[in-house]
Image 1 (cartoon, rainbow, N blue to C red):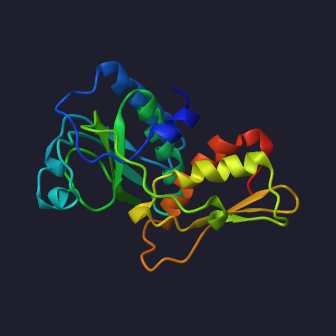
Image 2 (cartoon, helix red, strand yellow; image 1 turned 30 degrees about the vertical axis):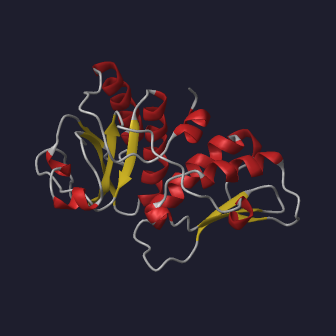
Length: 224
């Protein structure tokens, strides 16, 4: 399965089987995390076989069960967009490995000693990982024109493919507060839209830009 195929296959999953992730798959995830962290701006951390973060009331409120593996979403302050972009590539990698996942902002309990948040860093949540009890479901999607701006009504196929991939990206509370504009010089501008709850907008922007790039192909455009 390619990353592009993973975009179509991935859905948020909240219930997991009592099945450990194999060492070779954990190693692949660790390697991807090390690459994402390499420039020091992110501090993503894989936590395996740790059930306590999702063993309490908050997780039950979020309808989570069986979660024993997750990625702690830690980064330098101000690097939220980069966090979303790089962590979503790891989510898609996990899908290619046959694993399921879910971005989680609030409905878990922080676990002291299982990961590190250094001075100048912020923890934005976790990504639950494992073998899903199901494959999740696709939420109803708005027409892609809702998320597009262009100088003419006709847009290139690559731009349409990029927006189609972005619309399938996970966003906080499924708000999808983003848009892509095809500029007259061929560059693409990605922006957030106003939301009453804007805590995760920059992370969401990074996630949808990751999907857009994979759908559109980076040879076809550059970001504004």
